Every structure is written in structure tokens, then in C-alpha cells.
Image (cartoon, rainbow, N blue to C red; front, side, top):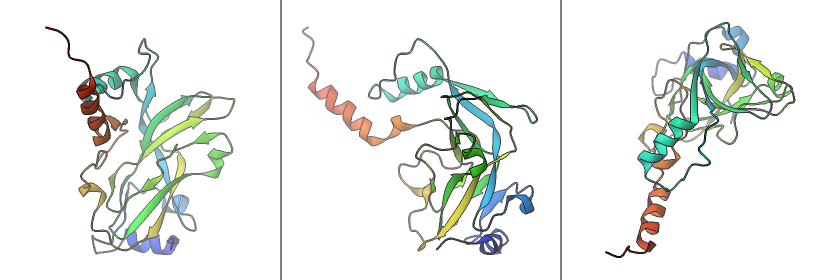
Length: 215
């Protein structure tokens, strides 16, 4: 079951911290509430892929080296209020919500783009629109411009909407998952794929099959 605007509001002011939805700052509820969703705003932190002489990221090299390569590849951009971030056609950038969000253990959520921006060619996520029960932090945008004209994106503008679904109370909150990588982030977070155990197993297997150098 999806929550309607009245049920979302009740959860936002619920005295029980285990049932309460947290969205802060909720600047203008009259503008942000829809029939079954709450609009979220664009934050001020962006990460863009920087052109460099790095041809690719070797996903099975040591995690420390991958982290360094990621830092060389990504450029952090801080946009001041009232100034635009320009997303050109075909470009990709990471950003985050202005709001800090906390989901109770008996709800899941989904982050979607607003149709107003979809009609201009803005996509706000590639695959990661689902939000687990127990998540807390800023939500990440995976921004893509699929139109033919640059888009000016201003911090504080409503570019997305968050809807909530009732579930059975989870016994494994997102923050307590063994492989959690993004819990509690308050700004834009880049991919931490190199921390996934699959890549560690691939590294170990590759190391075992490498020929031994003669002494």
C-alpha cells in the first residue's frame, strides 16, 4: 500500500520515533506535498566525471588504488544558492537531495523524477531509485541530460518526489546491513563498488592463477 498525503503527514509528526518519517528541512509543505508523495529539492554538492588520461578503472586492482583513481576521475563542484549547475546534453553527474531523510523500519520508499523535469530531458537516477527501510541520509541523484539543450539546475529546486510503501517491519535495517556503504551520508557520495565482496573474491582468484615469476 502506498501512503497518501494525509498518512505521510501523520508519520512526519508521529511521536513514536520508530514510526516517524524524517524529512528536513521541509521548507514549504504546501508546495512539496502531492497526493501520494513529497517533492524533494536539489542540494548544492555535485560530482562530475573529469576528462583525464585515465582510460578506464580497473575494477579488480587493490581497493586503495581504485579509490585513488576515482578521486582523479571525479571533480567535486559546490554550487552557491542562486547559481546554476549546467548539465550539458549527454553528460552525467552525481548530486544529492537538499533534505536529510530517515525511513522507519515498516516503510520502504521510492525516489522518482518530477514530470516537469522529465519533459525537459532530465533523468534523476539510472537504477538506484529504491530506498530501504531504516535508511537515513541524503538521497543520491544520478543526473543525466538526454535532451539536446543544456539544462540549468539550481539548488533548492524541486526535481524529484519521494513516495512511501507499507511493509512488514524489517529485522535488517539498511544501516545495519553488513555491506552498507552509503548510510548516514549528508552530501553527494560517489560509487564505492570496490568495497563489494565479489571484487575481493575475483582479485583473490586472479592472484591464484597468475604465473609465478622465476627467481
